[in-house]
Amino acid sequence: MASSVVRVDLDGKPINPLTICMIGAGGFIGSHLCEKILNETQHKILALDVYNDKIKHLLEPDSLPWAGRIQFHRINIKHDSRLEGLIKMSDLTINLAAICTPADYNTRPLDTIYSNFIDALPVVKYCSENGKRLIHFSTCEVYGKTIGSFLPKDSPLRQDPAYYVLKEDASPCIFGSIEKQRWSYACAKQLIERLVYAEGAENGLEFTIVRPFNWIGPRMDFIPGVDGPSEGVPRVLACFSNALLRREPLKLVDGGESQRTFVYIKDAIEAVLLMIENPSRANGHIFNVGNPNNEVTVRQLAEMMTAVYANVSGEPALEEPTVDVSSKEFYGEGYDDSDKRIPDMTIINRQLGIAFFLGCIFNFRQLYFLMFNVILTFVWWTPGWNPKTSLWDLLDSTLTYQHKTYAEAIKKVMSQPTTS
Ligand code: NAD
Ligand code: UDP
Image 1 (cartoon, rainbow, N blue to C red):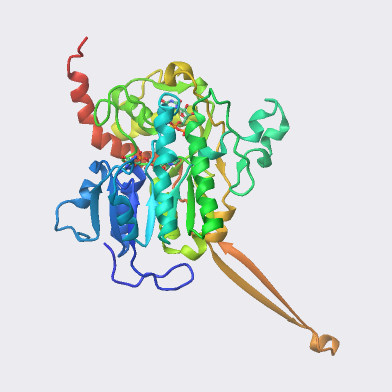
Image 2: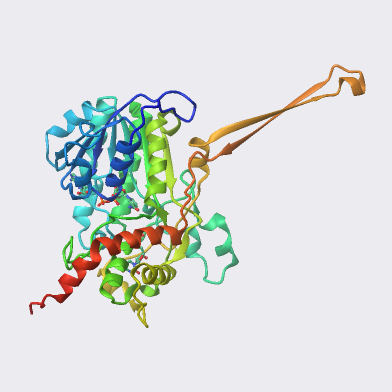
């Protein structure tokens, strides 16, 4: 429940209630962000999306404690004249709307580019023209591949963080060739980032760009054949959950050698709330938001999810829990992959951290009979945001949710005769 105690920002100043226009509020991240804002703050949300299934529990019934602080608008931002009015009514716009499932990048590159670049243009324009603050969701995929991935396999430099840690203000964006259409998403996101940045530089747009590094948790994507199309391919968490629920082997694309860092959605949302409520620290910045301590290969993720799911469901794991598939077979022509994604945390720790000053005064007067004082001040930063949840723990709570939500539905679907 939102408390009546006045909330203060990282600098101890009171936070005034905001009206937030959240585009894509009905998605995975949006649903968790709405929940957090309604539970812990007094801010109002204008929630825009084509769907609202994932936030239904926040909209109904009318007797909910936050009723009146969230309003759902079923809007497709591609073509809806109400968009500018809603942005004008708000203090802050958060744009989450996107096509962001890798299976679409090489098979529907036009939709991907339109969704991530063209459809986001009016949002940036309306914010800039009306002097409204914008938090735009980009992706860690704008980094593409690491510099280290181009070194020989046995090069000792591959172990050097300078060749793989991804820094907002220093790392290059390295994508594959144009026929590798996987990079259509990353390119579109990169160009919209550049546009937002340029609006800031030339027209004074107050902006923050968020680069999520594999946020995962309940309500992510869909389970094919239950709450999404049978032939649909969601992101890895839902793909592996689907296989576990159906007692089928988990498919490892190209050997499952790619590495990812996973962060629990509830940890990541804390960072977004800090950005919302600390504009003077967040404006003009691009933030990596991830958990560098939760790195695994996709194969290790599959093994861990198999072990966690056996605990959660009480069913023994399959004897052969994984199977190898080629990326061409799984995603089709034009797929390519990011090899490794470790976020550098310096900027988020500095901007959303709390500074401590330690002053030391050395007084040498008595020793040397001189008027000689030396004052030293040390400053260090304590992160105001730090992801806390280990990979095992976040998989445990997420797979508990998946099992509760889908196990019965999957049994039903699997017991139905298949049409040939
Ligand atoms: P999601 O697909 O669950 O949510 C996106 C929401 O946007 C959906 O509810 C969708 O209906 C809505 N939407 C799309 N096009 C729209 C349109 N034209 N009009 C209105 N609504 C529209 O995805 P998510 O995981 O919540 O991601 C949110 C944002 O974060 C995206 O921009 C994505 O690129 C970025 N991101 C997420 C992750 C992650 O780890 N989840 C990683 C990198 C980037
Ligand atoms: N992947 C896999 N099996 C699956 C789904 C995904 O091996 O069933 C791999 C995919 O090739 C990628 C990683 O898992 O290397 C993460 O995929 P995800 O869809 O989550 O998106 P990404 O992190 O690439 O944006």
